Length: 457
Ligand code: NAP
Image 1 (cartoon, rainbow, N blue to C red):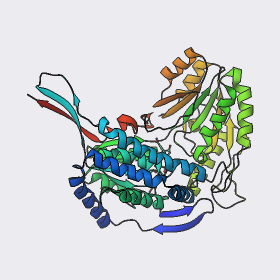
Image 2: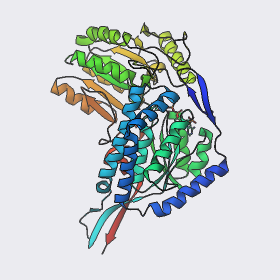
Image 3: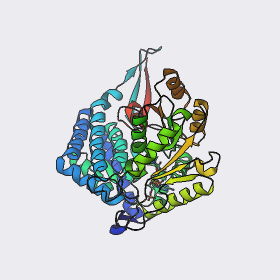
């Protein structure tokens, strides 16, 4: 995939970039290693100040708009969602700036030693391979804890968001982080292996698809390097008979269509029990139908285009496969080809037999799958009948039902009567083929540190 800005609203190629040569990559790794030599000794107070400065830059009124616009230009999210994303990046910077020192403070433990404790030390260069769908947020949620812990970062961003990648490097530089502490590598996917293998690179994190995660983890495994993987999902959204219907419907639409339907933790499978199924289906369909698809920069637009032509083509193939396997098309179901760009309408499919292979796939776009089940047991079984385990949202007002859902859903998080979302204060990550390791919270900052046991007689 060429490294380029292609506006998904128009299909126009606006800017292309030459990938770095292997010599240029080598220079950047050398710069990172040199920077780590001194950066690791900077104080928490200093790092705290730089992270707050990064947050100040992100939150400056004109810059919120600038960065939001850049995201819209490169991957098509609505400007409104872009603004919220920029502010969330500032939040995660401030969160780790303020909490990082406490998260990494020595923990004393009574043993047979005169004194023994657990200390947390930085590892060195961490490689982050990131996706385009939340081009700022995915990077900042890695960078804020990694830099606060004293690591240095190398970013290989998705090839379709190079200007976002460069903007983030610039923000962190302007904030005061010394040269070499955070660098963007404009490289293609094929160049990642060499970086992972470099002995100076200590660990890697990848957010993206299963094939990309498996490929990076295989190389890192061979090199005996730690990885964190945040991969795909097909999150269930379970609506039981006792749910608040209005709220469940409104949240279901938002949870499926956020980011033009391209979120790992979007609700993708809507599982409904008999007492509420008809009413939910009717209102869900009507609300989806009312969404406004159009220019992502325009006020009032609910959904912009998909990020690339390939993503739209793949989604269309999946929809066709689902219909061929017996799903009923209730809404949408074909690319909007009467306009330029990569637009796809809100789409609702129902009654796809859950045992078909296509029912196990992640639909990375505005396509909702609706399943009716006879009871709660069947709802939980269907929710878990998937190779992924990222998030789950479930709706009930009955405490016993709630407790079963919390206990039995196989996912990295369960949200009751709410939409699955990330929050700097809570760990985020999956089980099964959604990956391993956690970002955010105290767990996130502990992923890329040497948890050092100290024993003194
Ligand atoms: P992707 O194609 O896997 O790309 C993600 C990143 O990996 C990009 O930087 C890409 O570079 C790189 N990459 C691709 N193949 C690689 C390989 N073989 N070795 C090393 N790097 C490789 O995924 P995507 O289409 O951008 O993103 C969509 C997927 O990400 C969905 O499955 C979604 O659920 C998942 N996601 C997960 C989370 C989470 O937190 N769990 C968050 C967001 C998205 P190029 O662009 O150069 O190919």
